[in-house]
Length: 245
Image (tube, rainbow, N blue to C red; front, side, top):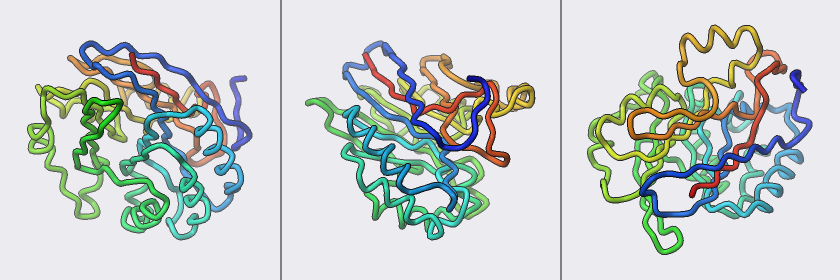
């Protein structure tokens, strides 16, 4: 169906990726652009978490714009993520910056979801090392957060398979010559409503789905939530399930 309203279902989308020299088989659930408000029933998010657990992913990665309200106003909803069984990380999106990234971090941390903004973590996955790097949103400077992108990317270990979590797809241009096998992003909503989506494409050339930028595979999720009017048209919501190799 081309027209969607509200949070009526769990629109899982399966994406299979083959990444050269990645060397690890992974299943990742990507949650993007939830734009959680007090109107969203926490029970629905509880049910979504249970569905995710049934998939048994290795990681759950939130690619920004989690909230569309102050974090404490949607604390009950955010606490649903306590139920996630997989390791979980998030980066901030532009809306998270506007509504309060510090309070969001406080609530998400209590829910077991770790902030990855401008950090690198090394994970043991199936006996191998995975390098996971995150970027805060490009507008985080408005809240005094400086992105030392050059230092961040040059600190990466080139022998390790690497995933970048960044809200805005165009941040793929910051990678330079560093090794990033896969970037996961959102932000665009796939345009949310056609034909306004054509204008979004002008600002966001990496718009929806799979792309290749130099040596990096980029996946842009349409996300699951809404901004502004609670309607999507020809821009289907998605909870992305990525199976690598």
